[in-house]
Length: 342
Image (cartoon, rainbow, N blue to C red; front, side, top):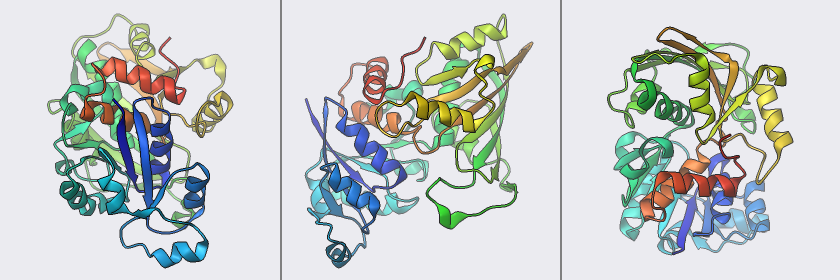
């Protein structure tokens, strides 16, 4: 079975999801939709993607830029079995009406509130909960990172309490209109929204989060303190759990990866399909410590790409394309060049 996929919105996430869809043997990309012409629109055409007019976009603007359109977003949606909504935050809620009218399945992103969909999704945590659903929400980059870690720690050791500080990047690399920033900006909503968002996947997880914004474009970093209910024998036991789980990459101390610049340089050197993104949670072996039941660890999250494999797995869950999470995750990761666990 081959599922026809439309990508509504072709920015940071949408263009990566579209590329990922084309690498799947059980999916076919119908097209992508944008509101205005840009270098991304030209790139989509160069890749052979059909380009459609989204939202309040003006066809004349594309005509003047010499970028041909295959039709409107509504026409694209009618050709699809499932739509991946990658529109800017809150626009997905406006688009939901189009998907309902076309009677197609829809996958939204974490910029929308949880009530937009029947289930919030993270492949390692709750693949089966999304099976056959008509609306699914792939949680945000930071929530995805925490949910993946929770999928490792909670079943193995139990979680009595989790405190996480989210050190957020100031903007994505291309978002020059948001900078420059010279400062560290606390997020004064205390606790931050990330904890409740994680609970949309793990309702009983006792987690609280706070956040701050710093002047970088590379990645987010999470500072975690987790009180476990069943203390591991050693930190090595915890590291081994992470190491054997898909979508985690652990850096050894001798590798000289001091922080996010080296993480992204590693991803570029590794290469592979696409943009040399870092789709895994990045952890440091020397950045994890166990003190009795208290676990402390850092993880780095590449905000531009971490949700891309989750979107692919969400398609498989929604459309019943895989027998289980492990099969879907392995297939997705092979196609995207994400190494299998050690």
